[in-house]
Image 1 (spheres, helix red, strand yellow):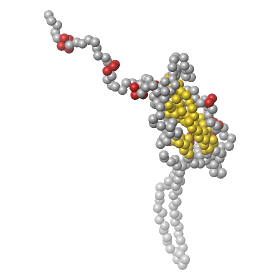
Image 2: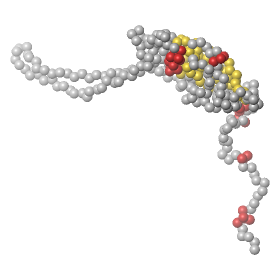
Image 3: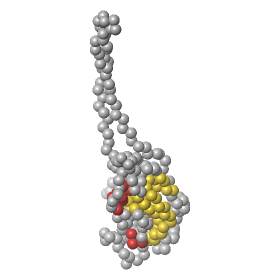
Image 4: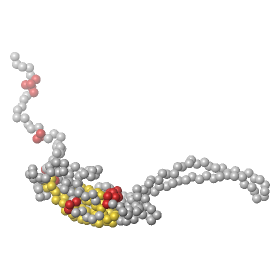
Length: 275
């Protein structure tokens, strides 16, 4: 896992020598010449203003910060598994001068959630907020919670729960990690909607948390929710049930072009009609 180091800005200056007439100790005038080697003038490297500069106390004052301000700070420096390159944990980055250190530590909850998906049955299920009928339902439960007290003075890493992120987990199981400022999430703050098959590391609308304290999250989708029963159990081999809306992988599928129930001879078509 690559380490993130503080940015160092070096300011270079160039000095020159001066020349003048010296008098000898004997009183006889003697001419002295000093050659000056001219060097091109170097402009000082422009410094970058830190986002959270430290004061005389060596820390950045965050006394009186609102929950929104604390959440914004955490959002900048907490990297979810996909963003942490190695993908084996969640990292709180240390970048002195650019994220503090803060004078007061911020309490952060790292919570890992297990999502068990089932295919929606019937046509009377609840609809999503945009009016679309959901294809799947899910049950959510907490698997692991880690409380951190962060101020940006050191990097911290939280390991993923291996069972939840195992490569051989059920095709009906997904994983969700949330980063929350303050206390753990309550049931009223958990998401009601999770969009499957529409997630991207560049999108934040795949999970609808009902709390502004959530500074970040990351969804690991179930591999084949289309084979899951309403109670979240796989009912078929995912290889035998394509994802809804997917295109056929066979360039020339025989079932799309059935053998005709009639035939003709090309010679009969090209032959001149009999007089």
